[in-house]
Image 1 (cartoon, rainbow, N blue to C red):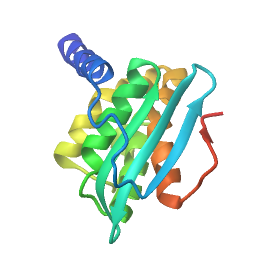
Image 2: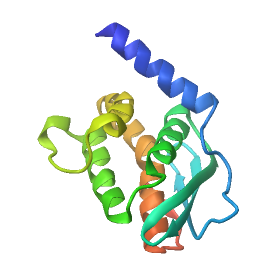
Image 3: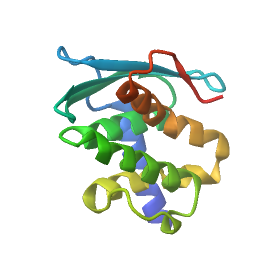
Image 4: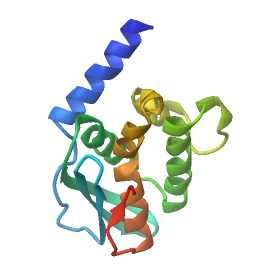
Length: 153
């Protein structure tokens, strides 16, 4: 199990140091800002949504490796997805990092979900759950057109 944990840590550190989709897409149609006052993480999520499909996605922000890695991994998965499907993904991810993953039905499976498994260990550290979920809550607010800052408190 320690080899798997080390691999998960390497993936998180890689995304934390070299985040994917960092920056604002030129065509962004919605955005939202998020803040975790407990540790100072900040994130802005940008989405280009057309015909209920996320065509492009990006983010900007600063924070701990878990926060940045979660945002980076999330942006890799969202492109090309239907907005309703993304809502299900949010629920499944939230269960992954807060509860027993096996207890959660629905959402998404397969390769996309497996990529996020590296973040499942944060449930052992409740203060880190907010770091992992900040980008996801902020993305939900962007999809809803909520222009108020998302906070984890």
